[in-house]
Image (tube, rainbow, N blue to C red):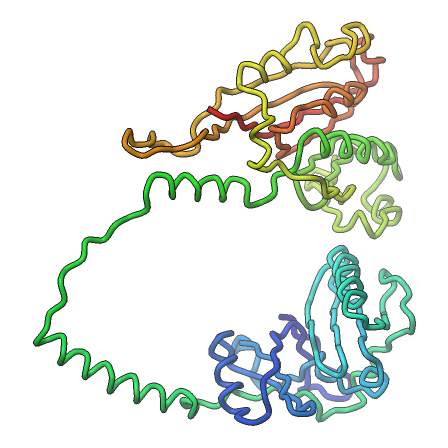
Length: 433
């Protein structure tokens, strides 16, 4: 949630963005409002009537922020604009410094009310556009801000001042809704009768049984692969290609290294080569934001390429996974067994580290409990140069990628061409026992 500065001409009025919005039937509106306020732990709300439904936003501002001010919902004011209500779906992106106020309205109802970064705004815009396309809704983009791409129409922040009485936040009324009182009384009566009955007929004590070893193992497998760990052979070459395409020198700063996780955006570190922070900030693209400058003035970190989505390693593939010893033979050097011909790709600088695999569960299976093949997990690391990326593309289907770091080595040996791009790839592998 974000509260703006005082509105022009209304020094005690401020706008609020980032509320949680829900809809409920207009009949029995008090019960719906109370239920959602309780769910969100909200102290204040704003609501609008739309046909047979009530549309409400909820928040819990700090009491210090409420002193001598009146808060108004920015999303409610946007949804009440005539040109927004006249369209099936509208997305408003309004830049405020390094943050963006994002409001998505569908047929007059607020669907999204968010405060995001510039980078997040671009991704959310794509997601919302895809949602509208799937729902058959024409999306109109209204934008405001120098770092926001031009939309279908411009949006002027002054439009939020046209209806000064719209969207005022009110305190959630205290009290228990009627829809809760009646079931509560019935429940209390039933509980009293049950307690009296149990006093004369005590139930037999039941022994609590925990999950079986097989159930615990299946849960461990589910958690291990729940995050869709990316296939190393698919993701690592793509990341190396994306990072190697990054401009090496920019405004007096030289690429030093990149760090990529399995998801999100890579972080690029640059080293000062005569430039200044102002030079780099001026030359940085929106995709490189936010830029973080080191206190010593010798380096900075900026956003890099986005990590692409690739196939994930799945336990359903375990039938074709190589065994642990077979994996060692495939990866270890010398000779470089991943080459089609041993002389095609030298093993210079290509080093493989494999840690022994361990069971997913520390406790072994009971002797009297039957089970199928069991998955074991180990870690791996491969260090090499960019020109050895084809080796990564041939990694087997039981290896996931967790991190990939890329560094520019300006004093590489002759075999690497004197200037080489080195990488360190790390991840996990899975074998069947």
